[in-house]
Image (cartoon, rainbow, N blue to C red; front, side, top):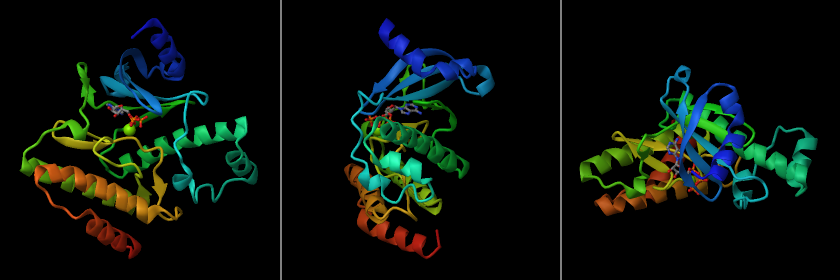
Length: 248
Ligand SMILES: Nc1ncnc2c1ncn2[C@@H]1O[C@H](COP(=O)(O)OP(=O)(O)OP(=O)(O)O)[C@@H](O)[C@H]1O
Ligand SMILES: [Mg+2]
């Protein structure tokens, strides 16, 4: 990393250093559209050797994802002042929106991790970053599923594991909303889902059914290359029916 990148990382991760959770930033994993992910050396007390720090872009540099389909139905039990700020495009409104986005990813990871889903263990959150379990090792991060070759039988097991996860998330009223082979990592024969800031509550969001369908169809489309012909539309239909019937 350049000196500037080191400084930028140290600023964003200050509270994680201060709380004695991380010792050193080792390398940049990826600088994506909305965040930069770093591999950090963890403090031994955390029980991890490495941790991933996801730092969201500052408000200025960051093009907010077109998030109205995800935000619909959110804020039902917020105080009026916060809701008004959220809806306004003022600096304060954007600040509330930013905090909501990060808080939402952290809370979703906590809920899903506690439910036993295959997501990184969340460790801590700061103003513009979250700290979580690292998938990978000193040499590099786990590959995305989209870059992972596998035998048909492994592919079958992997698809099954992902669909079981989607069902478990839904049983906890959560839908990823941006699921694809780019937001699934493959590490030690295990698939782990990442990137949850846009996850929606299936009880509140009017687009929930459509987002569930898109997530499942994206995943099934990926596995066609391994000769699997899973029908995403039908699987989503069935899963949604079970959910609505309280049978998930
Ligand atoms: N816990 C983790 N362990 C290892 N690598 C991770 C972890 N979390 C994220 N990454 C890596 O960082 C990349 C970006 O993370 P993520 O998808 O959460 O952010 P993003 O802003 O949506 O980025 P992108 O626009 O690239 O999707 C991932 O594709 C993955 O390679
Ligand atoms: Mg992503």
